[in-house]
View 1 (cartoon, rainbow, N blue to C red):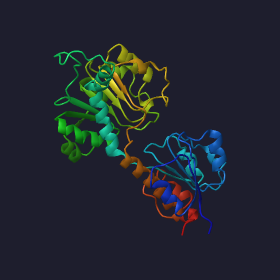
View 2: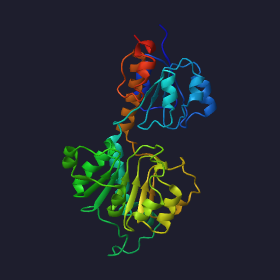
View 3: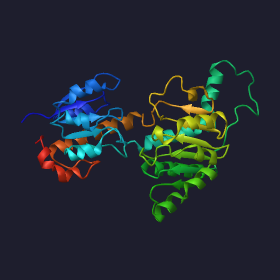
View 4: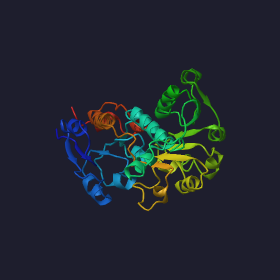
Length: 338
């Protein structure tokens, strides 16, 4: 039996590609940058599976050009770059990697929160520029305490819950808003309170965002929400850029509607080097690296590879996005690995 043909859109940490190569005929895009649309079209025309990233648009037109395609495995938690509905209609399995990056992303959210509230990046630049002339001053680089403050969490999924767990170490009052309210046992265990968005923005000293991008969440944080926040409050986003109206946030930071922000994601990525956010001191900006630990990225690659292999073995993958595809094209019909 011929080995399944797989295209991997980017070089991956070990052991992702190594696992695939044991049972598949694998081609990997050797570049650090994602493949162009033209290259992607050429490479997928005779493949059985694609292992992709958030940067790769896997739409109906692309799938039409890949008649042998059976599975699209995304090394990501989000999957809005894939036309899941079209995939399901075509009998293409779509998998993803939730849970794997929870701890890394939660840790990094706190890193941003602490960096912006304690002005760590500003202070670092100040020192490196040779501006530190007085040994100690009682008013130098004053920031904000975290201990005992109110934290607002938008989205109580895996990452939101991990954020709440960490907040206990700072003795914070935690408010949350989510599409569905958590069970009372979880609320008691995490010592969190479910509140309307308006109250969350009005009362929180820190707001962190952990929701997927959908029609409902695009620009969820807009001028109305930002003006509800305290002028001493901070906003952190490690979810998806379009959740925040970036132009309005820039105004809010420049005009000091809020004290500061920490952003790992943006409406356009990479961010334009002339974007006005870059010139503001009260925002910490990072290039979409919340999950960038060796452990998290390696595990993501491993899970993405195993998801893909499972489908081609005719067994249920650990993380399947489109459960409905099982009715359209059963696993027995896509099995290629024995």
